[in-house]
Length: 302
Image 1 (tube, rainbow, N blue to C red):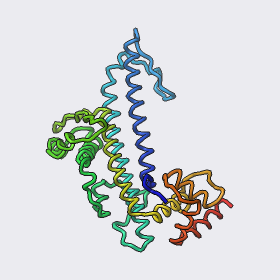
Image 2 (cartoon, rainbow, N blue to C red):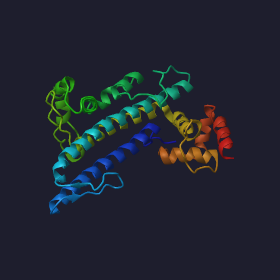
Image 3 (cartoon, rainbow, N blue to C red):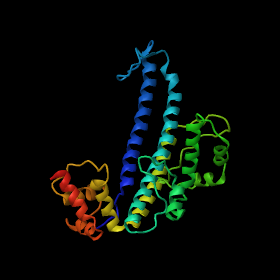
């Protein structure tokens, strides 16, 4: 069994969310550019499509003037959304770690709430709870902290900078992180928005995309660490839990057999390479979970 390039369930969900996030930001910017273009070619009031929303005629005299503000709104909401997505991912990682630890009879670092009710946790809190060294994310962690503090200002202060963000934005740690950023083709980061205490922070869509990239790098590291902790048996148990044993199993058409369902999740969703078709069944049997898995499959699909 090869899990070198595998996804854990939390990372699979994070990856899908982050891809959707990128598409949403880019198409929003494109739509606003279209609005600006419409004004340039119009001779009078510009009728904008409402796409089924009850906006009436939705005619604007100068809609292009509103584009910068709308871009800022999209960007600010994007930053807030991206930080929340990563914190939710950390909740998922903690849950997987705790579930496997409990099955093995090992101490659980922290009893998690139900994943439906648990509040998000930061990467720093996650790594501390699980005893993971943060050295592997030190290159990006200062930028995550910056965006997390910016998110708090967006959500709780309508985008106005508080003293905490103001101090952090001027700090040497963030400056060093930006200057030493390692991107494709040695591409430099876009300049971060100016932060002035009590003033609105002018966030651009490029900053929301940057927040997504920072979060992705942290998620990749966490995914690798979780895979290392779970091992082959833990990964198979994760697949068994999410494909059938949980309260809301993953929807799939793989119902020919319990083995087929388990293998489909492992190879298709988690990108695990199996040495043989029965390998996952054997591993699940070794931790006494194959019979419960088989019984539930038969109860649901026989």
